[in-house]
Image (cartoon, rainbow, N blue to C red; front, side, top):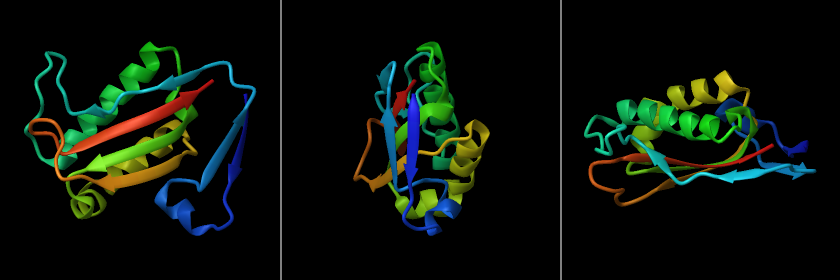
Length: 130
């Protein structure tokens, strides 16, 4: 796999993402369903957004790992949140730790949505390559 990062500017570096990722010679692509704070028994968390983000990250890591991929090869990540303001002010450090932990260089889109399933307030949708 050959990966090229396209960053016409430098300001996004402090926000833990890149403007675009070109990937060539892919051996596989994994499209992950949105991962949220759902416990192994299928129940949705009713915890605060920060706690839910931790569990959503763990669930995303598990899906990617179980599929034989690596989080470091996430090329596109979409964050759905019921409050962008709360995510940025109370959860962004957890997002940055996740990105740093795996050495990720991914394109990111963040969307504020009116609601997610049941009691959920954050969800992560990823595309991973190898």
